[in-house]
Length: 496
Image (cartoon, rainbow, N blue to C red; front, top):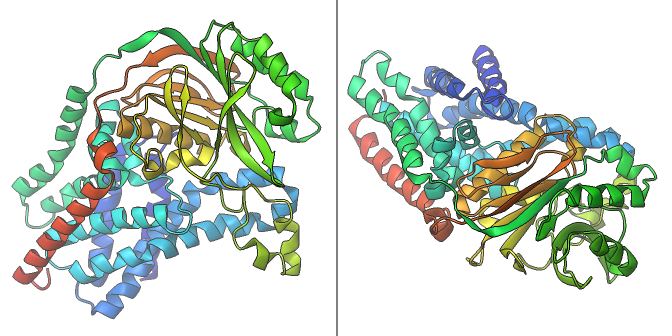
């Protein structure tokens, strides 16, 4: 059993190579057949209680080490919060364990249905995809590095998200990845070819769906990446040097609308109208600007985005709704503050969340502003089914240095564009800033650790996507159908 645990754990760690920035996509067709066979060796003739223990160790080991290496970039942020350094290792090893606890109810699927070959293949795909849904929604959720995100390796394959979203895409991908098992022992070539043929069908769908971009008009939208290091922002920054840098980058072209990143300047603009005046006076004429900025009201700070017009007025504000636990707020703060050694980490973590997810009406169209972390949650992009023209993602990935985190965060923006069928304009303090068309293609970008600005007219959105209309209901429908299929095949054969 210990050898099987070690092998499955190694496979979990290796699975990170299918994600950005490595993108070794075809490893998935090696990893999941081996994982399947390991499970089969151990659990096929066990009783249900023993099966659950075996699945918990083998599949749990696989996923724990997938999360451990996949989320390791998070600890980079501890370099900038010395008071949190004692919790660095707790976070590194504890977050994967927490994710595993959230998704562990999905293990019941292979425990019950691991009998016929088709049931084994379907139950593993169902287990992984249900687990992703659970960890993406329980508590505050952490929908990061879903296996379907590996489809970012190819623009045509990515288009399946316009129908399925990320969870159902994972189900199909894990299903397809096990096609080699039909060559194992029984040599069921037709079934193997049927399963692998789903991948070229997805590719064909994408190639048919993608069209050349059409642009609304000639008005330019500018995205700015100042590349200010996190230590420079925190250690007695020269606010006006940062401001001058942003203004200079904004004047590289005559833009009608400009986007500055999350918390772009360490000045509370709502209480400093002279700074707003300085900004507007030095921007192209008739331009409007969205600035990531901290706001303060009723004794509470909020992580916000301010829409400022040419009249030097704050015309609209979006307050971040989905905050980062332990980063922007402390869960159970009142309770934890009573514990002596926890006081040091509960005292100054305190953004207040926004009241609602809403769009803002800019001069270039109706926009959903997603601040940093919010872009990873597809169901929260447009919960009110508003008519969106674009998504604006402002972020500060400087917390995570040159790790894999900024690359994976960036890919989430591309998937949200495909799901909603609208372009994404992404401005990072540093990270990867980009202009992304409604098919998830990169029109232009500024690389990690680079300073610059990019400009583009607004790409025309696609027809309303199926996913934007029904969300994850199709995912649940497919799960119900597969459950019926597994029940049907289970009656045919008890073990196999």
